[in-house]
Image (cartoon, rainbow, N blue to C red; front, side, top):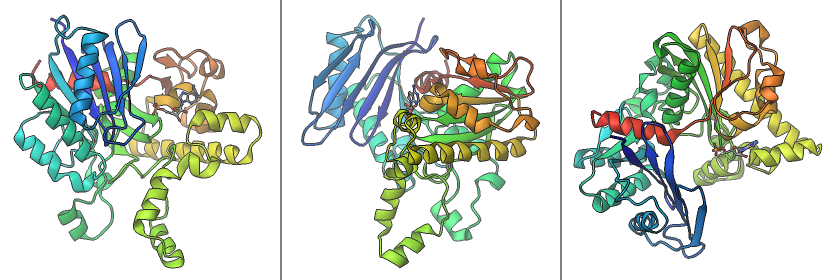
Length: 399
Ligand code: AMP
């Protein structure tokens, strides 16, 4: 029988959901409740089976009210949860620390463990916890599974996850590299092996997840062996509003020279940096538009963004020793041929080449954009984190 998994992604003031056919990955419905708990401007969108987007103004006071709103939309717009019953609920949880290397069926102990990890993800884990709690209350008879963004990276060896910092920081405060976007990296690296017609255990892949957040992962034989995000999602590639790698002495410099607080600096690095910091725009499409008009700041932003990717490709090539495929995924990776071209330019000697025509062609589904027979296959693979969460939910339930 087909299993339908309700995938829930609870943010601090939003709740995203999707009813996924776990066999095919098709979403029978998707929805988003925004500005939960805020004074005004709340909204709910629900897209049902016919693909029509229904949007209404809706101020939800709590995540519980938001989830009830979603359930109500299934009744009004469809699909009916009586005709398409939910098999299980899969929850995206950002931080699983070193404790969770796999998805896990949620019980009170798991909730306590997610709460214990709040210091490592103070913005995300409390919201995820709230989502887990209200969904268990609303669907007490369904199994709930937590799927962690960090889990796929738990195979990273100590030499790659250890920061060279004092022992007490590492031991007592759990300071290390964890990595994020795990479900996406896992999904697309698996798809890449499938596209190459090979067993995932035989292929080495560099995955470039380039969305609002962005990260690169080196995958050896199906396992993550290094990734660009670290203790938090700030490290690594340049992102929409995050700086990515910076000199760790920057905080001290700004605090000493200008008296800025850590809070101010952290906020600026997370929200006002990246593409936004350089070009004034966090949306890559806007950067592309301004660049085409000859805007020098947009040109620089594009350049810095692409250059950082190239550095990580080189680093992960060295980590893996041999690379079978490089995969571009998420908003920017899937949709911007210029960026793919700029990021991989000049790497021919490493066997990395693009077929410029294929790269510029229509990308609708998984696509090979390198020349046939190239040493390294360059692939564009749309990510599908919801499907991966649905599949992992069933795996955790032993199905
Ligand atoms: P995601 O987080 O995967 O939804 O990706 C969001 C990012 O992808 C934003 O920076 C968008 O500007 C970018 N993006 C989405 N569509 C396109 C497109 N057609 N061309 C360039 N960038 C795009």
